[in-house]
Structure formats: C-alpha cells, structure tokens
Amino acid sequence: MKSGNARGFTLAEILIVVAVIGSIAAVVVPLLSFIDSKRLEVAAEEVGNALRFAISEAGRTGGYVMADAQSNPGHLRIVRSNASGADLGTVSDPLTKRAFDIDVASAAFSAPVAMAPRFLQGGTAYAQLLIGPTTQLRAFDWAVDRGPLQAGSGIVLSLDSASVTVSIDEATGRVTLP
Image 1 (cartoon, helix red, strand yellow):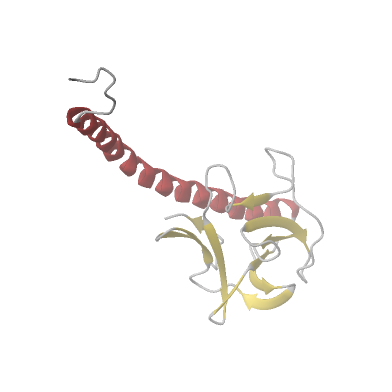
Image 2 (cartoon, one colour):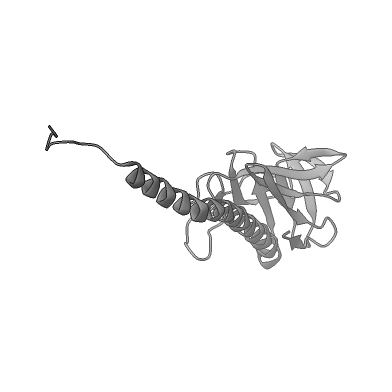
C-alpha cells in the first residue's frame, strides 16, 4: 500500500532550485567586485578633494594648513596650523560646516578602505603634510618639520588586493588621481 503522507523533494525540484541559485550567483558575484572598485574610487575622490581643499584654503587665508593622517589612523583631518606645525583648530568643511575629517575606513561609500599616507622626505614616508601660503609643501611628523616634500608623495588607498595612489606634486601642489 502507498502512504498518502509522503514528504520530501523530488530530484527535479532540487535541480531547479540549484539552477536558480547558480544563476543568481553568476549575476551577483561580478557586481560585488564592481562595487569594491567603486569604493576605492570614491575614497580616492574624497582624499583628493580634501588635499585640494587644504591647498586652496592655505592660499585663500594666507596661512598654514595641515593635512593630518597621523593623529587618527584611517582619517585625514584638515586643520589650521602655523609654520611649526601646531594644531590650531579644525577647518570646517564648506558643505557640511563640520570639522573637515575624511574617514575612509568607515565612510558609507568607501568602507573598508585602508589609507597609508606617504608624504616623502629623505626616502621616509611621513603622515602629516604642512601646506604654506605660497604652496609650500613640507613633510611633518608629530609637529617636527622633516623638510620639503619629495617626488612620489601622496596617499595610498587599498581595498583587498587593489590599491590606488592619490599623488601630490612636490613643486606645484597639484593633486592627481589614478
């Protein structure tokens, strides 16, 4: 006799479910790598804009501005400064009116990007950049002047195995993105 309460899935039903899941995965996996590359691009844009803003702020005010990636890892802060590299208070972001602080590690569109500042002097990378009123660019380390910025300086951003460098020209202060 046959039981009327047989339960389970047929082989055909299981194969259909596996085929649907495989089709969805084939579409989603390439999109995820695209999203990661976009996160890196967004982080590079944010950092590039912050450096450009710092340079323009120094020129506009005729004072010194520090791009500080040392005090808070994963952050790029823009602060007012003097020739000795002292922190004289935050610079306000013109859009948000809050302290200019880029957080690439947890920002909504760029998480979890890692940031490695490379403001070079004497072959050593430092995490602070002092920008003077006439585009004077100097590498700093905890308010210690390490000297004029050297070629190859910038900020390296990485996500998984991909990385990009936001470069800053040591003579002109021109910020370039990859």
